[in-house]
Image 1: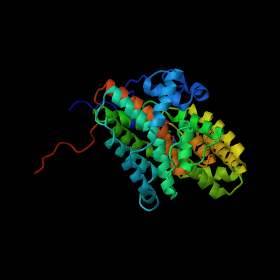
Image 2: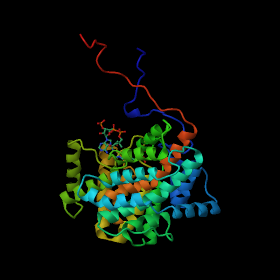
Image 3: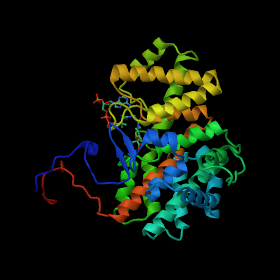
Length: 384
Ligand code: SDX
């Protein structure tokens, strides 16, 4: 037997490939050479989506064409609409959660996409655009069904971010809400070999199709150690609020946190496999979300103050810093978005990163098949 190579649990620190798309470092987060704070301040989500999927900053005519393509593709095929009509019952009375509904809807979209079995660069790019355009409609129709409401039709006059919010509520968002959503989608769009993106590359690496790779990535992102943490972070803050009452009493918050430490609880929205001195995205979203909370009223500013106390305790006592999911939970709550739609909205953004990586994998493929150290029984005979 060959000597088992040394291995890192969870592939921690392992360089598992090469990419031109993104670099996640303690020093900076870069999308195709552009630093995340630069993009958050100066680029729209449509521009970042084009950058990730096509590979360069769009000219104004390229951006106009891209936006028109996305708007034209927002509607869903009848089979997906019919499935989403049942989604409210599956969530309210059966065992599904919105991330499961989104995963199934994307899978059905694959059955209805003429390019589904075509892994060529052109077919993959067209499928990526169609998924980018349609996922907000899936989220909106699903939320309408959960609330027992008629489906809201996509609004071609609205930007990608504004239409995402509009699809869930039927009300056009304020420019401020549109901006907060847009920046959150820019921040969530891409993050090199995170678990869901790596999942999509493993699937694409077998030369399976883009819809299949995205379906697997959605399943991976659902987990609360990954994308599901934005919902879990808000649930944790709701638990703290329930336990300490409406006032942010620092000693009560500290006692709550110390109990959590004693129980060895993982505090959702904190820590990161790569970032050990803080997530570049978190302060950007925290600042935007806090401004939205101040505009919304006392309940919401107190939520952010509660979050800041929790964060201070984690940083000073555990040297563990918030990741992007912690401010996201508070921000989306302030915007009135239902908690179970937080991770589906993460998908509405990360579909751009996933598809960029799937296209890169198909274009420069080598099957992803690592080795494993065997720790089972020694060789033995069946009839011994
Ligand atoms: C995302 O990879 C990406 O890029 C992901 C992402 C992206 O954009 O794609 O950035 C998005 O998924 C962000 C992460 C969201 N997940 C959470 O917020 C869940 C809570 N976080 C932890 O489960 C944890 O921090 C992980 C999973 C995110 C990272 O964990 P690691 O690298 O496996 O580190 P670890 O669990 O081994 O922790 C090291 C130590 C442990 O202490 P010991 O057991 O060694 O004494 O730090 C402690 C952990 O207990 N620790 C925590 C903690 N995170 C780490 N303790 C309490 N609460 C936490 N959140």
